[in-house]
Length: 273
Length: 299
Image 1 (tube, rainbow over the protein chains, first blue to last red):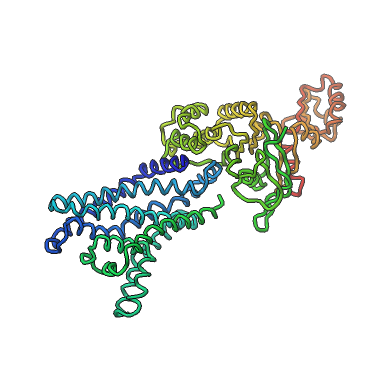
Image 2 (image 1 turned 90 degrees about the vertical axis):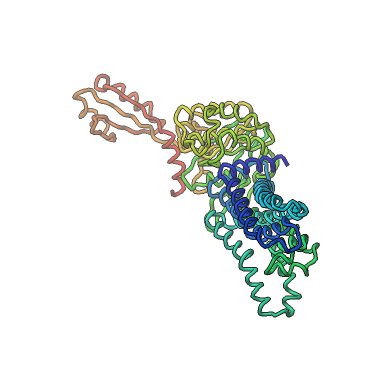
């Protein structure tokens, strides 16, 4: 455990020096405030408090931004050590490869946690400022924060796996961007296209819930929207959230990080320095 | 004494290339062995196998009685890679604190370790601003963490100035006196000559020679060189007396002979009296011995 903490402390310091902490936090705060400002107009007659609506908007933001930040922080994790030539020495120390990965994960999760807390917190402050009754939505905000961290863990783990597979930072960066495009953007577009062509047939009722649960980003969106019962406030694929039980989306949110870390550990084990 | 490192019939292949062919050696506690060889002779491969970084095809390797690279073996072994690198954003002190923590030692020792390698003044500067020699010294400092029983050093003195090299070998002498076995590779043959107990020469993946420098010198039986400066006006006479010699443009007459012929030849030259102005005996250098052994197998 001490070795994991020592690795995490070193990684956090490096991320801080490389300005990753300020970049991540700044990005989240900026986007959250823009959303809070843009989303403040049409809320009056929805019948829920202002913070819950903000959380629904933040969910749509987090689906894109959290995986992106996670992949940007993680693609260099193994490939960077290989390229700098720091890996052989590190691997002669009495620390296991899993401990190295968990140390990096801990540091990156801390940064991500800090960024989303400050970002969402800023939006929440703005909501409460204009509508004192918005404190009713604090539960939804808290849920959004921890589920964002879990979503981040999934993409951090996948980023480490890509980093170990590519072994060069440039290749790993390309793979990370490709993964983000496919998992976060194209996947949903494909599902939408299928729903449109299916016209409420077997795909929409049978396969769609499974397809949403199979993608960690969609599971995250479904979980937050259905938990907050804010389905009505969200359009698009979020509308399907009502049909998926909460335990299923939360299970997907919890299992994905474990699968991603296992994948990363397996890929890292294959790297010969 | 039980050897700290035992290698027997170690063989390693990279696809079609045999990087190591049935190499055997044993290194006892407190002994310093130098591994010599051309680039690609298998030195780094052998070191990486000892550290457990890469697998091997056949043979046996035992580090402090344990499998190389096992968690228990890694607590006993310290390594300095060739061209050692660190994260440029960390300071020397932070990097060492991290390594100390990984070995379960107190991070507070970092300052003392840096002072031991002469980096106390730069401890709080980022490694990105360090020169190659300073990075090398951070690398040396991390090998001193804990009490390693085996040190594996790949080209440890590259990038160090002559004074730092001497300090570095003094550090090694101290560790060896405490019982640490040291395996190092180097291209600087003169320092290896003076500061190690044993020389191992690898060539084309084979251990072609092993022993003290005196052993190797006797076994190589290389010719001794003699350089004779004739007294003014005696050069033609001397050249006629030693027709096997080569007359240089600098006026020196160069002769060669085998070890047993050396003293009789010296006696003949000394008998010439005032015809000879000066005489130098040039023993075969470590470079000559090294080339002799590393070329033996068709290289």
